[in-house]
Length: 273
Ligand SMILES: NC(=O)C1=CN([C@@H]2O[C@H](COP(=O)(O)OP(=O)(O)OC[C@H]3O[C@@H](n4cnc5c(N)ncnc54)[C@H](OP(=O)(O)O)[C@@H]3O)[C@@H](O)[C@H]2O)C=CC1
Ligand SMILES: O=C(O)[C@@H]1CCC=N1
Image (cartoon, rainbow, N blue to C red; front, side):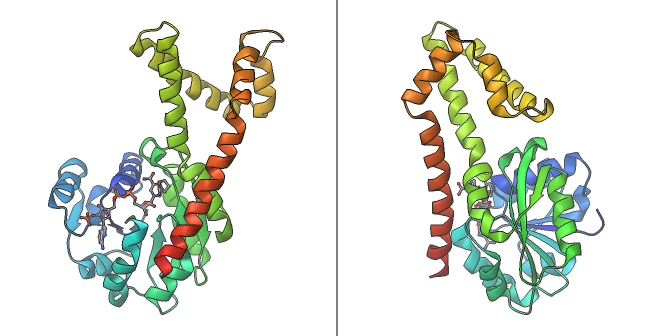
């Protein structure tokens, strides 16, 4: 991609994104500038491991880069926006991945009709398998959306949604990898309890989740049909599925996504105070 990329925040999301983008050569490391607030070790780590440029100067970052990814915690957004406000222009493309911070919040604090894209990727960016949703702000042109689409397509799949869908997206696919890891932890422990050694149990659990996701992606069949194919009447799967449902598996997933989406909405309220 042409031009330079500025990344504000040097945490786990920034690293996952950067790793994915560099590995598919969307940007060369010399064209990427990373800034954080105080953690020197983290900036050194980015410089040494990814050969990107690092700075502590918002002016340098904003003057040198047209496309900016903001990856700071939602609670730090207000303070950050007040620091960069004077350097941001209408030519910039500001992409925020912060959960629960809407484009209006960013537009109001940056002023002057800045182009903002709100994105919700997940940490699987690192292996180029993110599920990302993006939404445009009030002043965002088609070219800015294309740039964001290109960035997140380089690290996985992208859907474009209306902004009101982003809390639901956050509860489902933003937080989703953690639900799957929890399931992997549980499957591994269950396998051990059923008599397997840890290494084998974990390997089987991971490959099973990977294989099931790949089937759902590639077979063109709905998950409900794929599930029925595994479940022989009176067989082992039925015994397992019945237990899962008796213990509220579907209900707990529905409630988890609902609660996470609600938390995303709450975060907006907390941060706009
Ligand atoms: N982790 C995930 O799975 C996902 C996270 N997100 C979103 O990504 C964002 C980042 O999350 P995550 O990477 O987990 O958080 P981290 O805490 O790992 O990283 C946040 C980074 O922001 C830096 N920072 C804070 N304030 C400023 C500032 N004013 N200027 C420059 N840098 C600053 C911090 O550096 P320092 O301490 O030096 O200030 C830190 O390096 C969040 O908004 C989150 O909602 C979105 C999707 C998935
Ligand atoms: O837990 C969080 O708040 C962030 C947003 C989505 C995933 N992690």
